[in-house]
Amino acid sequence: MRLEVIILAAGEGTRMQSSIPKVLHTVGGRPLLDHVLSVARDLKPEALHVVVGRSGGDVQAYFEGTDVAWVEQIEQKGTGHAVMQAIDDVESPAMVLVLFGDVPLIEKVTLEACISAAADGIGVVTVDMPVPDGFGRIQRRSDGQIEAIVEDRDATPTQRAITEVNTGILAAPATILARLLESIT
Image (cartoon, rainbow, N blue to C red; front, side, top):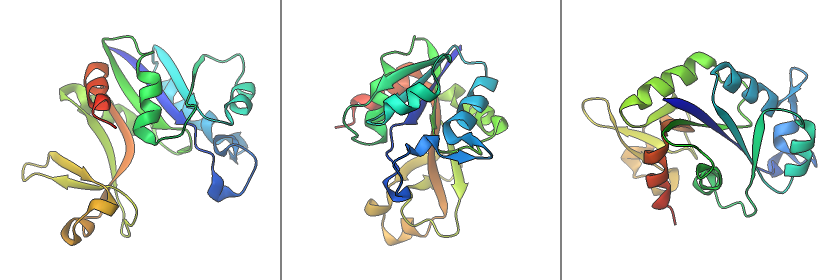
């Protein structure tokens, strides 16, 4: 199945208190987004879609002449909304990998495992955090399968005790992802 990658890069980075778009801040002498694009390219996708926001012109200018298909998110209404902006540009059938433009240390092996896990539905990258405040908790069934991702604000005290959290990185067949996105209001 063909692979297409959607990279979310519309965040303004207001907590960074900088006029530079968040994904253009550098780590190791390269913009955050450049690191993410590099690992995504290592997967040999058929297409790279990057969703940008108000600062998109600066980001596009930096990466001018590259193999990126740019998608504009005019209103920032969250992660699901950002993916919705690009999903119609994906050619089905395809496996879609959703990444964040500000996660420069993600490794190819992690993404390959996520894609493999999505062969039967959806692959989700999770991490164990000793202090998971603010993150969606991974609630698992007794067989180890993910039952739910419960946002911190909606979690019960028992769910808040869970330290496995959602990173937001996922892979899914385009048809499944599009169907799930339809349920977002």
